[in-house]
Every structure is written in C-alpha cells, then in structure tokens.
Image 1 (tube, rainbow, N blue to C red):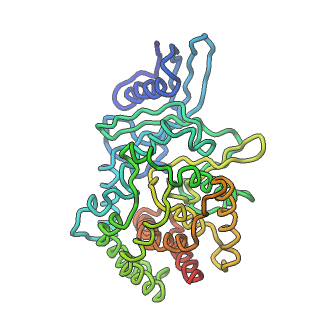
Image 2: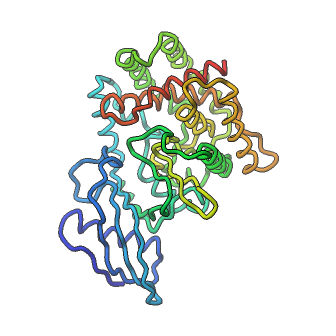
Image 3: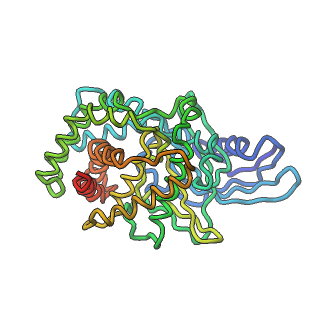
Length: 396
C-alpha cells in the first residue's frame, strides 16, 4: 500500500497517518493506494467546542475528501467527516470547568460521582459501536469507512461518510425541531424503538467490551452529592424555569431515589442512545424519503429503553401538551417496539417511563441547563426540564 497526503508536520500530518490506519480497518487489509487526503474546511468548533485544547493528535470534527485506488485499480473518492475524540479525563475536565463556572462545588471527586455511568468511556464505546456493532445498528448509523482505536490512550478517530445531498443534518446550536420536516418525530421514535428491541435482554456483547456500563441503583447512589448540587444550582440560578412545585417534586425525587431506582433495576435493560436531543439527530435522504441517522453515541449506556423515549418527548412535545398529545407519541414508540421485538416479549412499561422522567430530572437535564448557563449551548434544556415535570405530573 502506498499513499500520498498533504504533508506537513504536527497534528495535520498525524491526522493523515491515523486516517490511513482507520481506512485499513474499514476497507480491509487488501492492497489499496491512497491518492490524496484533503481537509476541506477549518475546524468545526460548533461540533467540538469542548475539545479546544492543545494536543499532539488531531482532535475535533473536520471534513475531508479521500481518494484511493482499490486492488483492481478502480479510482474512488469520498467525502467524510473525521471525528477524533479525546480521552475520558479530558471530557471530565470540561465538565469540571462548567461546574466551577456555575458555582457548583463538590467534596467528592467528579470522577467518583460519575464512575460507571453514561458519562464513562464516551469515545471508546462510540468507536466500538461503529466498528463492532454496525450490523446490529443498521440502518441507523451513518456509513463508516474506518475506525482507529488506541485503547491504552483512550483515543479514537472515526471516518463517517457525509450524508447524501438533501439530507437534514444536525445543527450543533439548535436543540429544537424548527428545521424538522413532518414525520421526523415518528422516524426517531421508530428508530430508537428498533434499537431498543434488538438489544433488550441481549446486552452481553456490549458488556464484554468493558465500555458499556449498566446504569443501576448503585451507580445513581454514588452520584447523590452531584444530583443534590444540581438541584441547588437550579433553585438559585434558574428561577425563570424552576417553580416552587417543581423544586418540591425534584427534592422528593432525590429523597426517594434509592426506592424508585430499585424498581428500575427490576425491569429489562437495553442499549440506549443516551442523548435523544434534536441537535444530535440527522435524517439521511433516501430513495423513499428520509432515514434516521444517529451520529453521537458518547452517552450510550445500558438502561431502561424508556429513558430515550422520555428524552425525546421532553424535547419535542409542544409547551402546552396534554396527556392525549403525549400519548400519541408514546403509542408510536410502543407499537414500533412491539413490531421489532416480535411476539412473546412485553413492551416497556408506563411505570418505567415515569421512572426515567425522574432520572432525567435529577441527572441529565440539570447538567444541560448548566451548559446553557455557562456556554450558551443546549439553550432549550430549561424548557425540556419543565416539560419533564409536566409529563411526570400528568402520569401522577
């Protein structure tokens, strides 16, 4: 195998070397000749704002055009998005910075609070899904041309083919459905239901990698100091969102967490996408319309399928929704799950959906509100938090 690339020194040259390694994993070991590796644009800070750091390795999100000749001499060219992500320590350092700027102080190290949670090994599990579980996740993953994993350094680099012209691609600064076309919500519900059905009760392969934690009662209990600090922040800094009723409900959910998370652990778990926010969802143009395409799997975890459903609902339902409106989307998910799971497997319970709304209220949504407060990202997390309370109250 021979190659020609853009030359130079430092991270750019390193990127070319790692791209070739990723292609070797993705295209196979058969002879192929790299003709050119060309970066098409500057760093996409919107996608990788949390990775702005000095590194000897390329880090972030970049568009590339790669040309090669295969073993038969046929010339090929493809535009890809290179996604190179740092280790867990670097990402936790960013979260620490966000908490510090928000005035959230902890006695327990953040690493301890979040150990074995959905925040663990973010880049390794994402790369593993694209490398080792592509068939299990088809057609909901964008096509991958190759994955490079340095497990010792917890560093990964992936090459994703850019979606076809006419696709609706995620906007990193828009966590609303303003750009969605009719039917996109149902496509999302159908897609996550299919993934949940495929992995429900069949998570052994995921666990064997060592990178996919099970979010259980013990995991949530070790983060109690952080969850309580989140509540304190919301009461102090988010009075425009946090009503007295919400504060009372949030505090009750925290106080009873050991009890209701014991109920969580009685239900069947599956692979979760873990971040069903509109800004993470894309819709690939196909011959028949559009297809859900899931890019960012950093928050993947083994837990109740209802959590992905709950997160989709709180980000996409209208502010004035009632139970019949919410039920309409819940039914779309439940029917899709039953269809993909087949006969003999009970659907996810409504009790589990209420439990996962509580999980979002104490865990994910407050952090996203801190991200909004400090960095101006996830600007509608507060609205989603309010909808989570509204939906939980309707269940009650």
